[in-house]
Image 1 (spheres, rainbow, N blue to C red):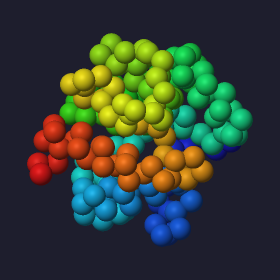
Image 2 (cartoon, rainbow, N blue to C red; image 1 turned 135 degrees about the vertical axis):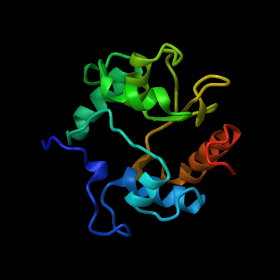
Image 3 (cartoon, rainbow, N blue to C red; image 1 turned 30 degrees about the horizontal axis):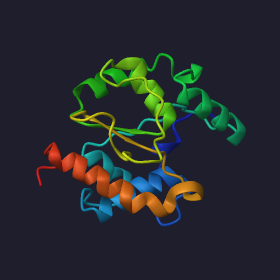
Length: 168
């Protein structure tokens, strides 16, 4: 296991980026004309921050176990994600991607209800509750939901525009 934050490791090539979630976010936000460039620099300059609930590379089996625990708000890995507090308190919107992130944010904020959800089914992607600043979606993977990426990003853009985040 490498204890690092792989999202912000500069890829050798953005065209063949091995980090699926980074590639998906950068390309799709760029295609939605939210980013000026599909790069980490463009991502940062637009004001985005991405945080993984799990910061090290772990086995697929362990990810599955943690996801199952997180669906019940019982993941030990995200019990005390205080590193998120300063940024998440100030953010006008927070995109909560996946069950682990949902568990982490629910541990920090009482306005994110700890409810069992099927985040890959309607009403998601979308607000966690009506009028919420939390946009909830499933985690972006090529294996399970790549065909849904355009729908997820379109829903995010609608969510963000109704809150005038991008001034568009």
